[in-house]
Length: 164
Image 1 (tube, one colour):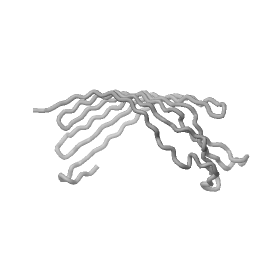
Image 2 (cartoon, rainbow, N blue to C red; image 1 turned 180 degrees about the vertical axis):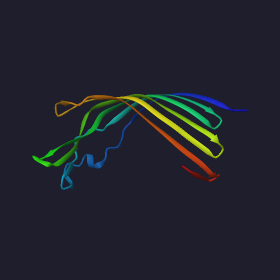
Image 3 (spheres, helix red, strand yellow; image 1 turned 60 degrees about the vertical axis):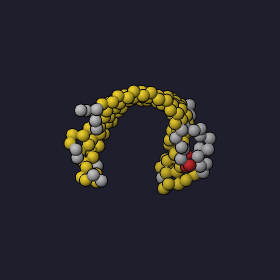
Image 4 (cartoon, helix red, strand yellow; image 1 turned 90 degrees about the vertical axis):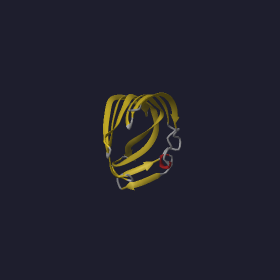
């Protein structure tokens, strides 16, 4: 007899990605003869508010999962590039808090065992992306519709050996 189970979950998380140390360093770092980087010690932390609704159905070893999400990134850290000290062949990179971005989308995943020695996960993501912000008095707002897909195969050679 096949077993099946169903789960529906809702969640809210606030994530605080760690800023890399060199984003904050207030001195020039020459990467090569044509590229300089300077950090911004005044950066505010970027944080992400994430709302998710998930549906998961399990059929013995097989799983179908559908997630709906809405994510807002606040204090979005942007890489800003410009010309260094009026030298057109030297590029200066720094970092600024530029605004917010928004993602609304769905992720789908199917985990399936066609045989006892083969398992695959088929995943896809469809989402609408918007960024809203201004840097140095210029609006850089934009939007796009995006997608990606991935297929992972897992072959069981022995009970303790797998090839992916």
